[in-house]
Image 1 (cartoon, rainbow, N blue to C red):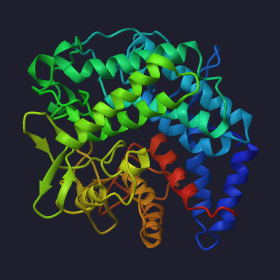
Image 2 (cartoon, rainbow, N blue to C red; image 1 turned 90 degrees about the vertical axis):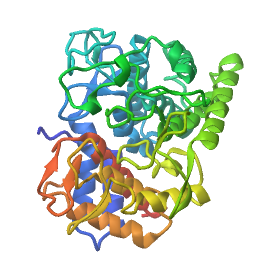
Image 3 (cartoon, rainbow, N blue to C red; image 1 turned 30 degrees about the vertical axis):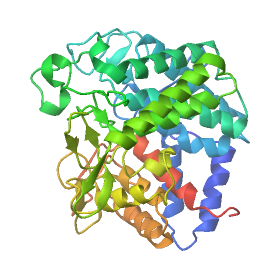
Image 4 (cartoon, helix red, strand yellow; image 1 turned 180 degrees about the horizontal axis):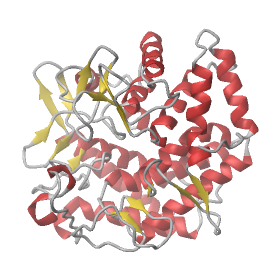
Length: 423
């Protein structure tokens, strides 16, 4: 890939990491490579000032992934106007896409009709894939809020943002009762996780106050369509929206009220009693008495609750849930010769995701655990200096997606979190 010069602010951050961890000689070069990956390989500024962000090896922009890809740059945005302008451009592009279709998860750079698959759903020329994922509407709101919080800027909170914010609230509210929704999705001649059952409606659900999601952050279909981690993220994102200085009156009140309704639904319907770990959060429920108990590597996840801002790290139900998801009783927790951690049904069995290892570190209260995870991440890069989607628990040279910018940004964010205040 072409070498792109790093801004001075990024170079200074790399130097801080070098000074802070002299005993880890591989860390600074890996941090530089992962921090710069999104910057150097995925950003496409547009004529209107917005920024298109490819996810890496797929030429489309995911709403969730693009927010995560630029998230480490928030640490530089306060003192680097160019970085702040970049993130502003990403938010603008995300909001433009939401106005095109709030049910799509990934979009094209232009209205060229390219798509992942010819699915039975209301596709349009801008849409790469139309899998409705609740967290796709939440990630841009959180990024917009974080940019304002860090910089005090409101340039990105323009008329397009306000229109999209209203549509986000309308969509999340509508999907509290999916029977009212026109959204359907079917993919034919595919694995089961790539399509919705019941003529594209998904499995039946009962009212809970939570909001329906067709698909998980992995782009895999939900088994039961109240996806707890994504509803937790919705609570956080809607509260973030209500706090923005340009969001006042009815929209602010409605966003806050919707967040409260969803939180009550989570706390009422989203918990189960586990025979080993006690009261924990389920991964998915349907409001009819059924649930899935597991966790997935993708974010939002149950492991990521404090990272998202849903609860404090010390919350007892979170700690019980954390103990479960980091145990062999989580069907997607794998232990091997090279590493142990959470994988996903989206990738082959026994593949651990660096994203989940980073989230484990970002939500740990133990400095020893953080260091062990950092060493594990550095030891499982297969000599590439970059993160991957997933790697085999016994042999990291077997990995998926050599160019996956989200994973690289997560590693950079984890390293930044380990820096002393002055380094």
